[in-house]
Image 1: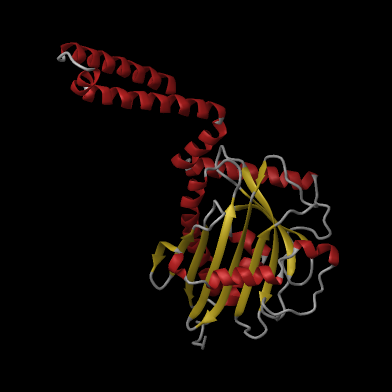
Image 2: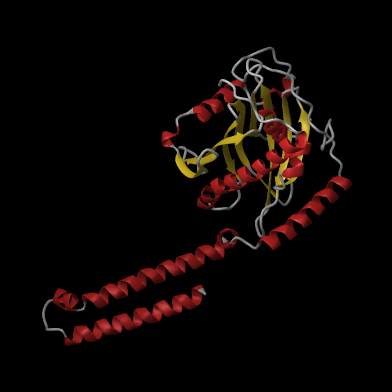
Length: 354
């Protein structure tokens, strides 16, 4: 297609200069700029065609050298059919099950183990005696990092861009941060008649989350550090021809002792020696923070997320699709939480003072 386009552009270029030449022959004699002035429209047309030809040729060369980038761009823009994605998800799931069956993990704790309920703990800004083994200290989220995340979460939204909102329900914001190619996404949600403890359980308990959050090919705890900190392995399916993405994340779960209705979940991608990169996967990067709190009549949920899938996906595609993915996640999480409340027979959340 590029070659044919170049041929057409070259033909247009020849016709333009031929027309310019004919006009020049019929123009009055005089200095060269007099002739140029007479055939100026033809000259400009030829110039535009030349510029277009150069652009087509350079684009053809770039696409020839970077075929994976062009393929990924086209696959994202065209948004492959839902049926194809479902088929790929099924195949990837079978491959993952086969891998775990023939190569069981050698970690201290088996995967697919349900999380234990959290005791009351201090808020993340308070410091108490640490029970973290010294050799694992490099793989936990520090108190300073937690305080920094919370500061970003509570910052005013005047510098954020509102992407989508549904009044009295949710709002999704995005923000371009200096020295970062991938935007930050902030969600503010009010779930009516849903306790914060239910939302926390659905997000914290890995067994529960694997049931309702179908985006994961794998979601396993590969290391337990202490009662609040662990390390997770996550893998998600990407549409063909993109490679699947995975990540290793340090997670910290906090339930504030001063407010039993306030919960935090911190996530941060790390490099963990016991879980090296796998063939066929691209290791992603990022961080996230979820805060859940009971308020009058329901749960106030606030999140801050930055996810960089790495690889050759153009950043403008990531930045344009991530907020919309957050909105789809909100709708899915809402349906699951409402169903859980019905299953548990929980009464509406009573009014409380925030």
